[in-house]
Image (cartoon, rainbow, N blue to C red):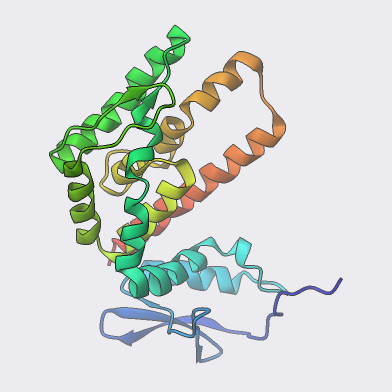
Length: 238
């Protein structure tokens, strides 16, 4: 079957200052566009350099799966920049389903580990938002107080586009808006958020041994979180 990826047609990739304080990527002098035909321009030269490096590294065909920084910038420009209110509404639908608010009751070792590793993240979130989270044991749904919904909405609305982009990516990847908020507000790096969100799975792997498919999935998740961390760091350099 023939490849569906477009072939490389350019020789030179460079970063230019499109307007004061905003940097674009050019391929042989032609401005790089998002899939929606918007100019790919960002407020951080470091972030633009990272996107340019991905395009410069293309050998024969453009494979978006190998260009994660470009994908995140496209998401920031098209989804976050163009659909911010709808994205926030969508994220708020999952406030009551945060993994970190549903603890196990056994075995004792896992209970202790959740307390040691989940409680500090929840405490950070409670302090940050000035709220009290409802935590339950078992699988029965637990609604969070309206104050939590309101405070998180305000926090999301106050985020700049790079932070909201990273929040959306991390929350969706790990099933926890608490972990995502801790990530974008500086509590923990990609490695810590990974260990926190997959605590039970990692615990089971220690007990019963590794499954290579599960390990591959975890490796991919950690890679995604690491890319999100780099994206956010570059975007905040200005």
